[in-house]
Length: 304
Figure: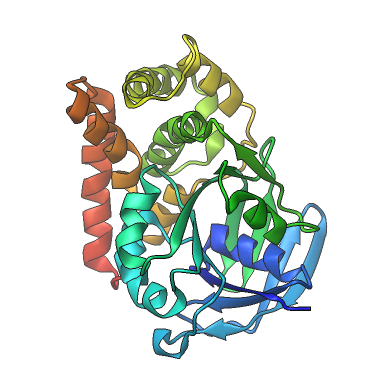
């Protein structure tokens, strides 16, 4: 049996869970590309804990071309992942981008050496408890969603028999905007308050969230997403059903003093709004405040 060669670039919560689950399939030959050598990954799922051997590379110059790259760095770190992509990618490679935000192809394509770029929406909650310890929480529905296309079935096949469920949709743009709508409230508000999702039980936070969402819904419709008349209210209602103890990637990055991916979230809304001449004062405020936090974090940390 010829095993599928897969490289996972980025071993945060999302990438760590993806690497753990992909490694559970005997059809996958998984290599993790990370800054630190990790030989074994502890993986928590429901009430079970397993220890999964990892093959890790820390030097991009030692990487070789693969069939699949799972790119799970933060959106703002794509350029820093370019040395990995340069060695891992050929025109026969598919790069599945597991990142927040939109415009995955435009962000990653210039670094992918002609590889196919497959955007993916991440719905699962992946928490990095330690450099070698991750936890998977399912939120609702599919764990990953990709657009209909020639590589979609093959991508879903990578996770067959693992805890990750992959969906495929012809309405990917709409679902992409719906995920972005969740992120433009979840990430900035948890980061700024330094509280997990339980903070959204406050009525004042819900009112602020609806204002942010209504701005973003108008922009998403202008971009071509088929969003409902009550989209903002429906998104917030669904979001309030998420586990109160769950955190967000920006919340964890803020606590750790890391740069934040605000440009890919509220920044994407503001940039699209400018193209269409739409006002987004609340999203602009989130962008301004968290850019200041991110810049301060970057000044006090090493470049990712």
